[in-house]
Image (tube, rainbow, N blue to C red; front, side, top):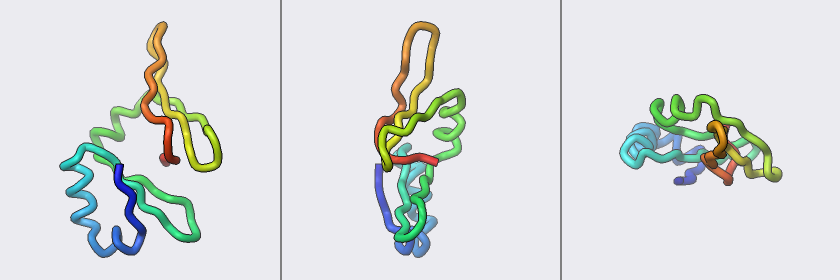
Length: 81
């Protein structure tokens, strides 16, 4: 996972998107006076279908899926939109 500030992301949006696709990972765009945002590939986004999300604390969330008798933890850090 990569974190980049809004100004850098705006100035190099194409490179940010290319990096997300190349790494198959998400990038968090941090903003000074607004909530952060997440950039991810469409494949990653569609794979999250059926996921549940619960707040751990102010800045972190638990993302998970329930499968019959198993619980699959997707992520347990950062706030994802």
